[in-house]
Image 1 (tube, helix red, strand yellow):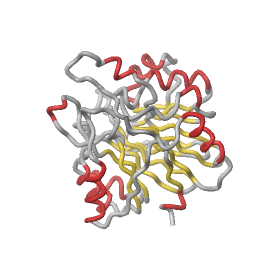
Image 2 (tube, helix red, strand yellow):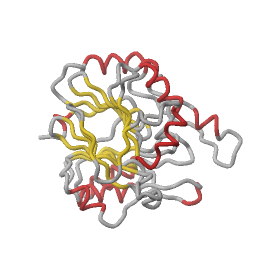
Image 3 (tube, helix red, strand yellow):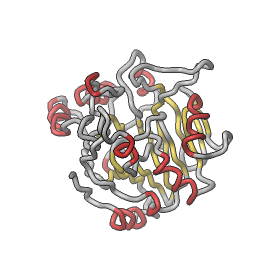
Image 4 (cartoon, helix red, strand yellow):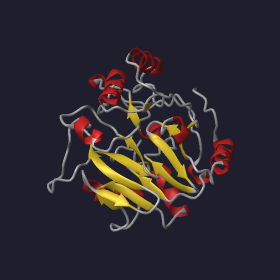
Length: 282
């Protein structure tokens, strides 16, 4: 079992100790889940903090055997101002994670793909008008943070009958700093131009790849993630979506080797570890 560098109360204390910092801090919660914090405001991006998938797929042809420990129970999280989901897959929209968070933070903003509204509300047991739904190119702003939607291909760019994307990534802007969280995605035509339009300096990108034998939708592999970062002129790339489930992971050392070979700056986070804006925003 892969251990977290910080977990539970130790992780909570690290978050609280940085609450009044002038820097933006981003903690990796595992898979594609992150906690953003800036001057006491907090956003949860695609958090998965349960064993719901392990329980769901036990005894099936796709056992979701966890290989890393949970970093924190949702009930221990400090006050949350915003949560987002990039798409409906449980490791990005987990009821066992988000229902406790929303119950504890009833005024929390929920950002989702508009195409997924009915599904999200049913899974999270919330009213239909509670989430803020985005489609590609749309932006939600609320003072300290904004999120702009970019299509994600998982494995295709899938739209509903109204043209709304079921899979999104987000350009997250805090204090003038743009960060790209891709959600789950493969490369697609025009992707690079969409990202470069926002000139993000940091990207949080999956590296687990696209292997049809896994019988799940795929993602960028390590080489594709590094190549995308290089083409977009990113100052730093943080890999994610690996080391959670045994059947659907990647070796982060492969990513490190490729990033070094291509001279692409990167930072690999430990579970419960963080990256701060001083490390990439200069």
